Length: 168
Image 1 (spheres, rainbow, N blue to C red):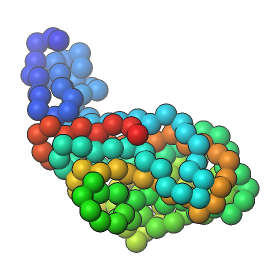
Image 2: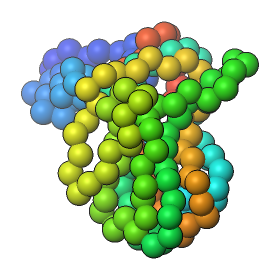
Image 3: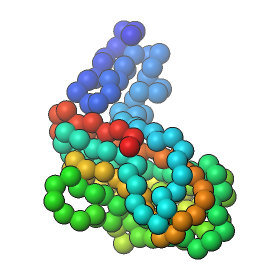
Image 4: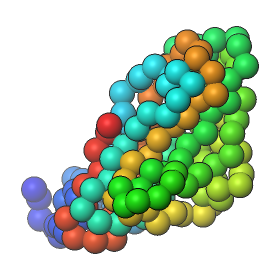
């Protein structure tokens, strides 16, 4: 570390010295910490965990998926939800999106409003409404068994001490 300020207490440390300023400051003051999930096959007419949140609450600031293997040309809807660790049912993070035949490079994102459909395109906007999540899992759900793969990345700010977020 160079001469500067180090901020800790988040799940990552940020070195605000001149040599790291361009990379650490935007992460600290915009989207927060990031977690990546490597490309994985679409869930087969079911739900699968993308990310697991433990130890407290987070503020979800962005989540983006990217198609890495073309989605089969067969009707299929995709949505994201939150599955809380405490008793209860899944909470929608977005409405469904028809992903039939989505090409490599297609992006998925949410607005943060549960009634809005999952966004899709070669360019998408980021979340306009941030979402507070407690311990649990962010899951993706499909309505059919289609071939295809996507990688995912999410950004968050911890709201409690000791929070961890990992790819599932």
